[in-house]
Image (cartoon, rainbow, N blue to C red; front, side, top):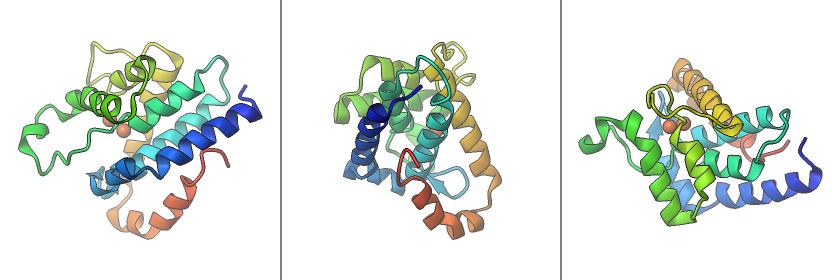
Length: 169
Ligand SMILES: [Fe+2]
Ligand SMILES: [Fe+2]
């Protein structure tokens, strides 16, 4: 179980990342039927932590960094043809490279990011508990985004931003 001290430490890291200007740039990258990379990312973080706090032996800090940077690829594949082909397979490694350059994430976080597109990246199975959580929750959040209309998302944007404003409620 997660301790109060650990929660406070993670919340502080989360707040720094949530308001970091390099990460805010992800708002400009459209995603999944009218969502954007920033909202998607922090919905995934929240979803992962909802699951993770119920489990034992989780490396929460590593999970947090992996979630925040899992889609830190920083391009719009719809606009850049060179990225379109193979986006599904290639963006985890591109995100790792960007995150290592901008924020110095750990190898353990990179490992979790690398398998989040399984089974599209079939050889890269999510082995750890943290990697399985990210892979599952990412799929769930993306599916929800695809199934919600653009109009509905636009209406709910303020609510979504409120939901992601803190890691722990
Ligand atoms: Fe992804
Ligand atoms: Fe994602």
